[in-house]
Image (cartoon, rainbow, N blue to C red; front, side, top):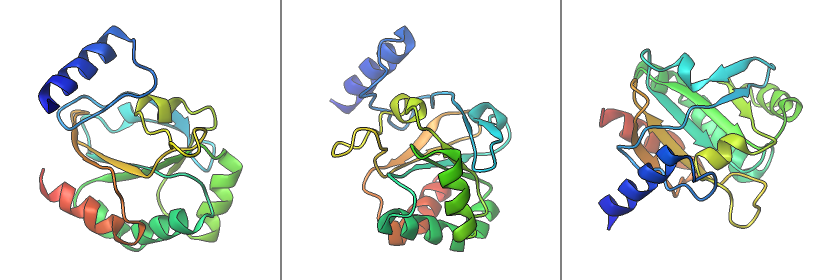
Length: 171
């Protein structure tokens, strides 16, 4: 079932017919994206392809307890993630100003991408089922070639670093 589902989702993505409800799984190519970070700078997945793996973590909303816990956990272990050779990018539907305030208040050293129109959230199929305008808490590990090597669906905000580092060790 898993292989068939991945094959069908991959075929549908290639045909361009899946925009919402995408079921991206390990082995599939990560959708390309471009979004502004908390400083208003454009960030593209293509900036990393061929250079470094990417930890792309989606979260629902700046300043909420779980999202703050997750961001601070990743901040506290950011050097370990960098030492593992990966770039770390956060994504939520909040705007650049909210991200700037969030990053400043919690001293976040990594880019947080603003996706107020939900384009990146839709491309990765991570809409929050309770709040459709927000992202679900899901993390993708993407290799240097742009292929998804792992996906963590039930992220524990207090252990996000452990889940990320375990995934990076699989590479």
